[in-house]
Amino acid sequence: MQVRVGFVRGRVVQAVVLAAVLAGCSQSPDGDAKASGSPSAAGSAGAKSAVAARGGTVGAAGSACELPVSFDIAKRWKAKGIDAEKELSKASKGSDGDLSGALADSLLRQGPVTTACEIDAKPAGKIGFLRVWTGEPGDADARTVLRQFVAAEDNTSKEKYRSFRTATGLSGVEVEYLYTSKLLEETKKESAFAVSTPDGPVVLHLGGMDTDEHNAMLPAYELAKQTLRVL
Image (cartoon, rainbow, N blue to C red; front, side, top):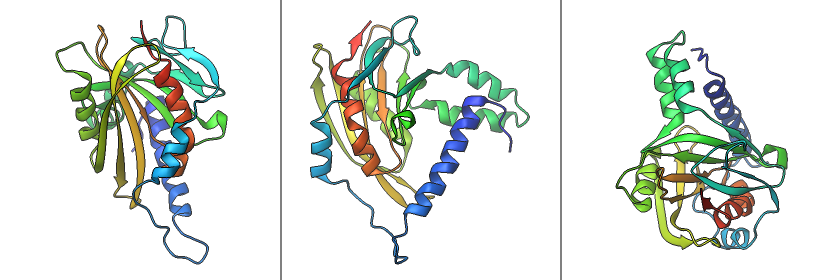
């Protein structure tokens, strides 16, 4: 199948490459499968105590991603705005028709929100993304939106929700959970937080190649959370 959408094709390639990397890393030198499971609490707490050095700001008009919120991104991380509706339209007109459109929809939408910005950690030497998802204004609060977002991912477990308040005085809800890939038979930690704005809910999600990589990128996630402002 050939999907004639740059963003969607790129995401598919990323998934294939990531699968190959994880498959290679899942074996120890003596051929035994590497154990996977819940993340190390000590590692998570240590990573969360740090905040990454600031490399710029996104969200405001004229920035790489125009959003209902603004926040700082980590040094050397690269932000790219995503026009989800444009990408979905292109996919639906591709050679595979409905199939291309369905693939694009699965990559660009999750629960009640749609991808709006992708911040790549590779320029900083890490493998993962901080992605921003936005939704339409409505009555759902941040916790409800976040629960729907996680539920739409499938194969998740051990969700831990908690409220937070940023250094800027903004209230929100965040979650840590485990995601299990049936294809790779690997379990890793993921994190996300959500806030409500007059223009609709905003979700920021941090994945990563595996739990260790995720923990290494948490300072960038914390920087975004602590500097978050509604525009």
